[in-house]
Image (cartoon, rainbow, N blue to C red):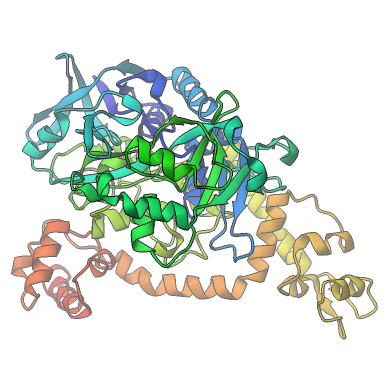
Length: 619
């Protein structure tokens, strides 16, 4: 008998199995093929806008993705550096071979974790509670909790042109029956679609016609525990090129041949990661689209053609790609394809990621309607933590929208649902200035420590770090610069106003053109790390904006704390609109704040609900 059974060895499955095993629960990971655990079947990158912050949050909670990425990346880049800290994110060009190999070793060495190869096709259910799983060969495994992280494998089909081929990613076995079993249990199943671009031979590209895209020359990492960095000159470069009118014309002339527009696609594709044909149709006014050429591994001769996802027939793909500067004579090693798969309606989940339909059953990753490795890993970690908490009779970990992008994502899924693959975006977070790359540990380290995924030494390092940062902010307030100080020369060089009266170092840091590095030569060095220096700058420079966001959070706090009884029948609430009754009964929000975020619920409905709660539950 296992405490936790995890089905699927993708990014969600890895975190979902490591978390309970590290906490001390007897855990089983079932995967169809162990060599594919942690694979990167689409883009070989970790992070990106908003996603990079999710990876930091995973690390702050005690997860694995950031550490593995730091140990195996080809290139590391901080995005949006010309913008404010609320939208800056780290992105790693991952190594397609090294990353999953590293993950496999982590899993094999983990205590309390067994790994079995097999295809789960049914669940053992008793009294509406999951009791285990059944493999396609009839083997059964008993478990107190089960976490499904099936990715894009449920009834998966590969689409190219007008052809459909039953298959998982990279010609792996698909799960044939599990989604039908879930449907029979009462789950609402939806069909989704995603895709991947072609790969070309690395030496068949004319790089002289492209633009070099180097990494960022700074001491950067996803994990707060990483302290070694690959020098910029040893990182692998990427390149940028563009489509053109000729490319677009070929696509327009052959739209009827691609899966998307030929009528064979049933699933809904990702709005924010569209195929190239979708871009041409929806953004017909744009004369060109960016195409990034990204090496996949030091051990492979392949380039990933990012931005060129398509389901066109192979002969049309050949014509399309050869119109792009630098790719005129490229050799295609792997053609692009789209993939359709089944997913559940995430409105049937509690915020803990336990399903409302079957007790002790959790789901995480693309089965919940998300896209992306990072979104999957984050859900896997939360599901793993909460399965453990359920076994311990502890309340689940539910991150709020002002605490983490992970909290925003899960709240969006279980409150609003999704009809297309959900991708995390900075624009989805109303408190994004609070959810920064630099402060994920300040937001979430305590939760990781309380869940026993962050050890005493790491936690103490975090406490020491926070003390150094806040001590330094206080110290900078005591350091004064006068008009006669030599820092005036630096200010003049930067185009900043010279000092005409005394000013503190802290006040000087509030100027847009100033940062800690610029004043560092003029103050006593207290040996902060580069990351700590950046945090000091952000906390001082953006204090007014951060305080404003915190005040907004406080206003919402009463609504977040206002609990709604789980057994409330909204049909009994007088004067509630018909739509509100239907949606509230379907979603069963846990708080007034969550209820207010449901599509179709208006302020009048919330007022009526508050009156009902006061009359019947507070009287």
